[in-house]
Every structure is written in structure tokens, then in C-alpha cells.
Length: 215
Image (cartoon, rainbow, N blue to C red; front, top):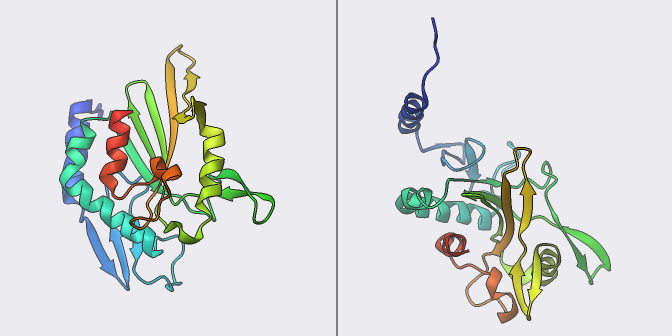
């Protein structure tokens, strides 16, 4: 007996499964969330930064707040956003497990150090791919200027005094050409972003999506 199903039936079953999964469960100070666009399922949060009986969870306040803001945004905008991209996903970057970082020069230590943003997003729109890093920490103590300058040296170019995102071309084995752009955003407290770095600052999730739609 052939147990294969066509793509329409597969999509229907996935949607049915999605509707049957509880979007949130709470247990021993943990919030176990199902956010459909998160690369790994489930996503585990804690409001208690001192919790230590479980590893590799999201418990830093700025990161927890970011996830909750994103969840609120998606509750009203996910369908609209999904119609503007072929697909998109995001994930928390685990500093102890993931080898994802942006090198930058830190004059305070006179060393090349590693900028490890908290979150990474992937977007596809036609032949355009976007890799977006988001670091929602307050910028008051993170040496953000050096980190953003390091990012700019790798992923941007100077266009008559204006920073312009580089386009990296990838040619697939079948001859298809894809354009890859990399962007970084920080989410500082209101009023903390110097003018020079305003292009990297977002006050809310919607601003990040709006930038991607327009570029």
C-alpha cells in the first residue's frame, strides 16, 4: 500500500497539528512556548535569571522581554508578514553551543573579540536572502559602538559617506543566483542610541520587519 500523501494533504495535516498544540505551558518557574517561527521547538523561558536546574534556556530579562514582544507582534501580524516573505524563521543564539559571532576590535582590551548577538533571523523573498542579528540588551554597558563598527567593516560598504549593506552573491550548482544580505539591530532603551548608530536601533519588532520589507 502506498502511504505517500501530496503536498496539499501534508499542509493540511501540519495546520491541524499546529492547532492542537498548546501555545504555552508553565512548570516550576518555566514558560514552555510554542512559537511557530522558532527554529527549535519548544522555546523555554524563565523570569528567574538565577534558575539553574535546567540549562540553555532564555532567562536574561532583555531576551525574555524581546520574545514576549515578538510573540505579541506575531499574534496580530504573522499572517501579514508571512505573505510578504516566502519563509522566515528565528532562533536564540546559545553562546556556549553556537559558533556564531562577529569579530570586532575592542580598544579597551586591545584585542579582537567576539560579538555574539542574542538572536538570529532568516528570511527568504524570491532570490533574496536576509540574515538578521538582533541584540536587545541595553547599550549602556555593552561596548556596542565597537561591535557595530566591526559588523560594518564586514557587511557594509561606504557609499559616498553612507553605510550601505553589501550584497553577497551565491551561485547554486543549478546556476541559480541568490543575493544574501546581513543586517544587525540593537534594541536599546529609549533615547540611548547616538545619531551615528541610529540605522541599527529599533524600538519595537515592527521596525525590523518594516526595514526588511523596504530593502
